[in-house]
Length: 120
Image 1 (cartoon, rainbow, N blue to C red):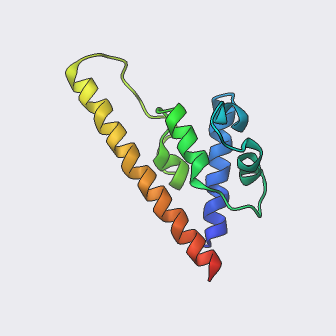
Image 2 (cartoon, rainbow, N blue to C red):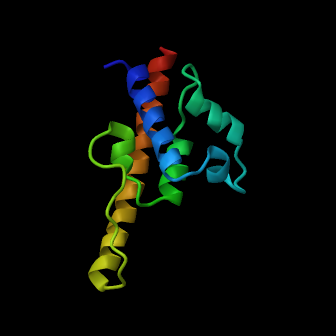
């Protein structure tokens, strides 16, 4: 499967998340020292490569959004997060955060591979 096809699917799913959450790239960036216009162009332009920053911002602001779904399209867009303060629920939240960190590392490695492939 061509990398451009994979990337366009990821861009499409990110756009779906933004519509579902009724937000924009500018809102995601907020007061962070990031160029929201460059990030917005990554999402809207078919020729601009997508960086992992946008995916990170979504996962950081919306922990109920499945990063697996963003990257692969498999499963559901939203995870079922239980709102409880029990110890098992807190352990689950810690586990989810660890999973998110590992997934973010995977995203970074994936984009590094994409950049290497594009530069060859």
